[in-house]
Length: 330
Ligand code: GLY
Image (cartoon, rainbow, N blue to C red; front, top):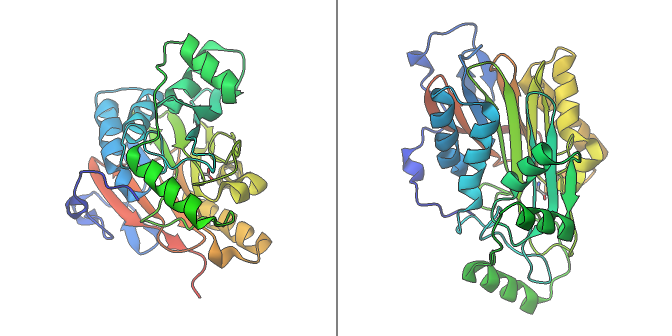
């Protein structure tokens, strides 16, 4: 889990101070009631410990910045956190003891960039943006992604922290077979961040070190556009966390976006996509997948397969966190 220095006591959990907001017809997010629509900017990010990343992004948006810049800067904060064991520097390595990173970005014009199985570069989100802006391609992987990053001024660094190395050594001694990861609030994964800026434009990014002790070369959902991330500036933006293999199989973020296009609210769209995933995976109670969604009007959604998926939200000038409602109740 992340041991970031910020205090979780600072957070406002559960009920948001909606009384201080000018209420329109309230929308229900799990047990919370929030006004809708919200005034921009809005940021919604997977996992409560990513509040500091939201703060960075919100400061930029409040100054009138572009959503794409905000999500890149926000995600970079988490990527550089050595105590976050599932993203960037400090991420747990694969079974060979190598930290490999996946990331993607998508902007309001539908431009996309991603990198997968990238080694030795602390900010894959920025490499993904560079792929988007400086190449005719959308995705670079492995050594090609590393060569591209180095040629574009990124510095090669050792991303395996002593803590991550110790965890890997412990895992290696146990000689465990590859088991499904347990993803929860104490062992979260991907940062997926979506933002709506003051101009009403959407962008999103996600970044992860993926499944701890995975097979070397494994790629999850985060760099796969439509799976771990999708942005349609006419409709909304979606990102995911949890077991990437399942999200890829359901093309999850695109699915949620298309449900919104067909008239579902972001919350309804997240719920329908999770329901579909549950129906296609008989052992869904042992798994975790969570989606967050941000509508063009600032409306939000969040829902997960199993409990403990948390969300960091910036909306109507306030930073909050909440626990998403989930499918597997019994
Ligand atoms: N959702 C992150 C991964 O599966 O790699």
